[in-house]
Length: 255
Image (cartoon, one colour):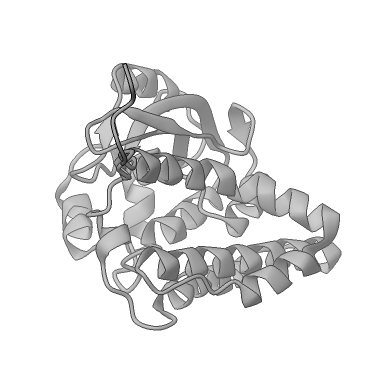
């Protein structure tokens, strides 16, 4: 995070974006973005993401839960509070707007991008491009998959961002309660998955109770905004590709 903030300060362009060493920009991205940025009304432009395996083969698509076009801040933030649905390589933003707010929060090694997207989205309309212009590489050596985490660290990182932006979100009443319930459920599910991915076993007691408490309308909101199936599917497909199939044993067939 600190190195990224240095890069943001030293850069000279009006717009900036992130590209981790294991992710990709897809062909045509720059041309498509150049056209979109020329008329973007706010500080953030986002697009869909493709999932690829370590060798670059496709694993699936991660779509934004919003229609193409310019989305009002209130609508975008409401969806984004439930789950960070913007891939790290899928956001392009006005560099000055990010720097005015201090850049990335360096205490949030995992959720700093979510925090930044929420801050930028609150400033004005977000332009949504419903095209996969970047690719997120799924592999077991990535920082988010391989880094050791302390007990509760994943949940603390996500909870810090949610609490910060719920406090600034100017919505009250039942709608606010519904969004918060779905968001806290999403954090519990994501945290349980992070622990399980590191060999800690499946701890589904709390997430299961929160999911049940959401009820049908809450389930719809959670599934729509979290895109949990789209995020898990590529990882399961990669796991199946890497799992060797058992070889039949026994006497050879008769000829």
